[in-house]
Image 1 (tube, helix red, strand yellow):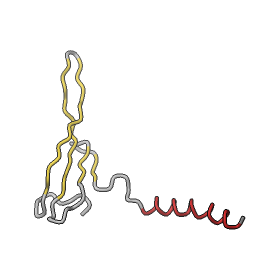
Image 2 (image 1 turned 180 degrees about the vertical axis):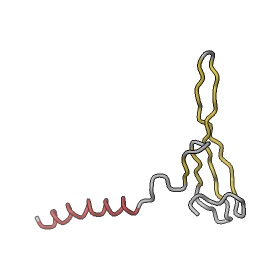
Image 3 (image 1 turned 45 degrees about the vertical axis):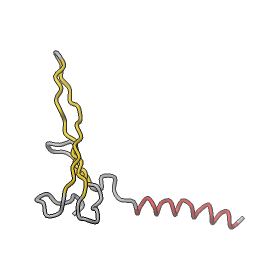
Image 4 (image 1 turned 60 degrees about the vertical axis):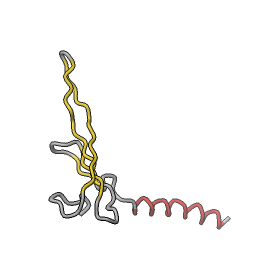
Length: 87
């Protein structure tokens, strides 16, 4: 019986530890400003990474208009003027 109680207590403690060790939800991303989001992927062995930027694109539709998100991804390298977001 004691083994089951210990096992029952160990599982939530381990899960809580894993949640606490996880990176924040927005790790590697910036939100707001003139763009919707700007996110950097992991740095590769050659020092480059992938950056994806989501902007809003205005679409005119007769008497009404609406915004459509538009995602653009490119490879960014070291030594540029815009460093990796996690740096």
